[in-house]
Image (cartoon, rainbow, N blue to C red):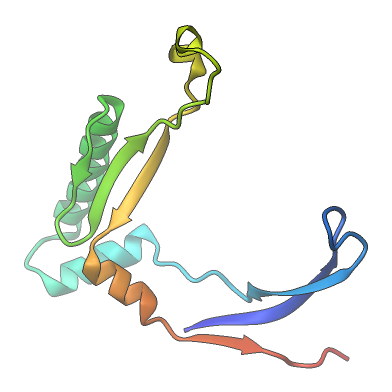
Length: 131
């Protein structure tokens, strides 16, 4: 479950300039550390902690090298990584050069099981009164 709290701020710009607006912000960001991931995989498989750590380090290197070559990487049920280079809109074809490209970005596209996991997370907004 992700627990949110209600926050407020005064809008500095836009059509709501000067107006106080309210929004939900996560109370804490929960995450699994690398050690927690390694420990869980060790419990669920016959691999040692060293084997799992080496596999994660190697996976990172493989993905990094592939992305540096402009390749996409499919990670089975997790999803895929790819490089996206957004173009800048130019007035003439002659202006379209390497310099007319924006900074490359890494895009991760989750597979269906990952999207389902995200959609099934329980959300709660806490509206506790602060004294």
